[in-house]
Structure formats: structure tokens, C-alpha cells
Image: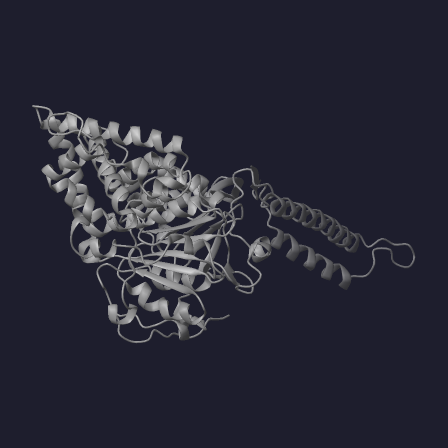
Amino acid sequence: MSHYSNNQHPTSLLTLLCVTVLLVGWSNSLPLPMMAGRVVDWFSALIHFMAGLFCLHTAIRLLENLSHYIDLFGSRKVSGQKGTSAWAKVKEYKDALTKDRRGPFWGCALDGPRPALFFDFASNAMTVAPAGSGKGIYNVVPNIMSTRKSKVVADFKGELSCLCKSALEARGEIVRVLNPGNLWSEIIGKSDSYNPLDIIADDLTRPGGLRDINDDLRELGMQIQPEPGEKETDNSYFREGGRFLIGLGSLSECMVDLHDATLSSVALLLENPQRLEDTARWLAGVDMEGKPHPDGPFPIEHTEWAKVHDPRDVAEFAKLVRAKAHNLITLISDSDKKTYLSFVTGAQQSLSVFAFGRLALAMGRSTFSMNDLKEGDKPTTLFIVADASRMEAYKAYVGLMQWCCLTAMKRHPNKERPLYCILDEASNYKINGLESLLTWGRSYGLRLHLIFQDLAAFERVYGKTALDTLMSETEIKQFLPGQRSPKTLEMISKQMLGEQSVMAMSGNRSIEHLGLNETISEVGRLLATPDEIRRMKEGILFVRQHRPILFEPVSYAEIEPWRSQVGINPFHGKPFRKKIKLRL
């Protein structure tokens, strides 16, 4: 802290200068004090003496003022003790930009030559985009077009498929569209289908896969009948029972029909109590009286798929399946059927959305393999389309399809080949296991880009610990303009941007000495307050360890050649074109 006061010299410097100039001028008009004859002109000597005295005093005052201002300017230089936050300059992060202008696109910087911000990431990224911020035109579509690798895209209204499918195919990519609602089928074409039970059927037909079936059935059950948020209640016991029925029903269907077994057939099995009991007795090999069935149990050891496995694994697997079937028979035969009815009711409710209708058709025999995303010479893009008018049904479908995809990617031997998951509207459905996926997905080549409206919405769906994990495990954090969630604004301003050091000056005027006292001190100030962020027209981008970047969002309609390649949004019915800001 520095203190300055200008009331130490009552006479102002300007007055002193004026008097000095007058005395010097007057002395120059008078003869020198020493005249001929050595007679002293005392008046002239007095004027010359006063002029010299005032010149000396003025010089001293000028030096004092000069030192005062040197000290003043020096004291205004911040030391950074109160904070070192600042907006990034291009020279600080230019080496982190991708060299070929490919990969995820985040906008254009506002500093220096305004470079296009192409930053790739190896693990996770996030975009917070409030309603009306233009996340589709500024982020989602540009990232689909700029990413030349395989990708999975959550498409909640079908518009992304309409916009990008033809453009991606034109540049040589393979495009798959899961569109159970047949939205915009005249543009997108016929929907593909994918059967979630392929994971179990693959285990049955893959050498060594029998040891994975139990875990996969549990994972499948957790996806179909998840726990509600972070809460655990007594109902967890009944949900576990429901998952047991879903798992056993799925396994029994797959053991018979392999890749032709579907969740629809599992749902129909659980809806028919007599058929469910008959199936359990068939697997266990007992009749209605509990005696061994004359034809024996389901011949697991003699199936075609059993031939690819070690006989010991087959024997142990058969024991496990028959034990599960006996447990179900005991549960059904209990005189008090409340427990069984609670189990089966929960399982029926969770499977009902897949039992009949459009979702059932889209989950029939698969028309492609999820492994295609990691194989082949050409990138493959998978669009998962949901019907926004039936979100309660479709969010379960979207979550299940993404789980199937991620599971296949985790098990694929090619861990190096990346897969970008552009998860738009990530808070409108739930990806079970997301928190752990954020931490180790990178090891499997998974690059998650989560896009949602605000941090509070994400926390409501996934919980506080998942939000903390998201904030710590994302390499790139993008905040589009228009942020208005108090939680999001507070986090950006206080926890992410932080404080900068500034010099603050305060002053007070002294009536007694007719002077001004100045106090200068180094204080901390938020780089941007929540209100300033709320009113910003620019976006804020955090890239790994670099300082925050102010950027201008640039839509695909302002980028050539994307503006010419991307199709027409069916909700608008006409091409979207704006003045070109960026040429690639």
C-alpha cells in the first residue's frame, strides 16, 4: 500500500513557475549588479538573487514531483499477490491448436489474428449451452462436420441426421441411423436396428464368453431398471429382484434363439406367469411336483454354442443357470406371493417400453455391429434419434443404445482408434456409470463430449459427485453466451475464472491543508463477475492448463464449405446461409 499527499507544499507548482519566470524576465531587463567603477546596484542584485533562489526552488520542486510520479507509476504495477487470472493471448495456446484445422471446433478467438479454435481432446469435453444459445448451429453441427473420425451422435429431434447424413456420406463416411420413430424418414431413409441382447448372444458364442455372462446380465439389468439418482432406499431390494428376472429371462431367450432373441420377447415372457414358470422348470429340469423331469433339464451341454467353450466352463455355467431357475421356482411357489409380485411388477414396468411398438421394431435383429465404429478403413457415424414428443419412453432407449455402444467399445481390442461421443442434451436422459466412464474411458479410445443446458440440470440427473468428476475430468470446457443459471454463473466467475490483481486508488481532500491525500493498494478483483458473464456476447473456453479464452461463436452457416455441404433443417425448410467468416 502506498500513500501520497499533495498538501506538503502550500504553494502550487504552477504558481512557483509563474513567479520564477517573472523574476528571471525582470532580472534579464536590469543591468548586472556589478557596474563599472565597482559600484554595487543593490536593487538589481536583490532581483537577480531572488530569481536564482526561485530557480533553485523550482528545480527542487520539479525533481520532487518527478520522483513522486516515478514512485506513483511504480506502485501501480501489480505483483500478482491477489490473483494472476487473465484472458489468454493467442501466443500462449497457439501450439495446442490442431495443425490441419480438423477435429472439434469451438469458435474463433477474439485476440490477435482471430484464429479458428480447433482443439482436440483425448478424454472428455463439455459444452454448457442454455436454451436459445444456438448450441446446434454453433457447436453440435460444426463438431460433427469437423471430426473426421468415427462418432456417435445423440439426436433428439432428428434434425442432426437430416443436416449431416448426406454430407458425411458424400465425403466417404459410413452413416448408421437408429430412428425408431421414423422421423423425417423421407430425408433420412429407413431406420437401422440394433438388438441389445447381442451382447449376451455374443458371450454365448464367443470362446471364454460364458464367464462374462453373469456380469453382462447385471449391467443390462442396471441399465433397464436403474437406481433413482444417488438415493438408496429399501426398494433397492425389489429392484434387484426385478433385475434378476430380467437377467434370467434374457438369458433363457438367448440360449434358445441367440441373436434372434429380443427384449420384446423377454417382456412377453415376464408378462405371462405360466410361461415364465414353465421356462424356469424347463431350465431346472423339474416337473410341477418338483420331481426330476423325465426329459431332463434344458440341454445346455449339447447346444451348438456350448461346443466353442471349455467343457468345465460349460458345466459350471449349467449349474449356475439351473440354480437360478430353482430360485425362481421357489419364489413363484411361495404361498406369500408378495415378494414375487413386487419383483415381476418392477421388471414388467421397466421392460414395457420395449415390449411392443416402434422401439420393439428398432431393437429386432441387428442390421450392423457396434464394432464397425472401431473397424474398417472409413469412419462410421451412428445417429441415435429420439422422438422429443415421447421422451419418457425414448430416453430409456437412448440410454440403452449408448450403453450398448460404449460396452462394445470397451471390449474391442483396438484401444487406440478413437470414438467421439457427441452427447447432445445429456441431461435429458441418463448414462448409467457415467462417473466412472469419465475417469477411464480414455484408455479405450472413448472421447466424450457432453452438451447440456446448465450445471444444475446435470447435477439433478447424475448427482453432485458426478458433477464434481465432470469438472475435474474434462480437458475442454465451453460456455456459450447467454448463461443465466445462478449456479453456473457463480462457478464460472468465482471457481474457474478466479481473481486478477488490480491497483485501487482512494483519496480524500483535507480542508485544513487544502490538499488531496491519495492511497494506492493492490487488491483482488474477479476477472468477470457473474453479472458481467450474464451480459457477455462472447463465449468462454477453458482448454487444459491454459488461461481462459474469449471466443466468438461461429455457426456452420458462416463456414465454407460446411455451409454448402450441410442439408436443410426440416424444422425451417430452407437453406441456412450467412456471411462467410471462416474458410477451411
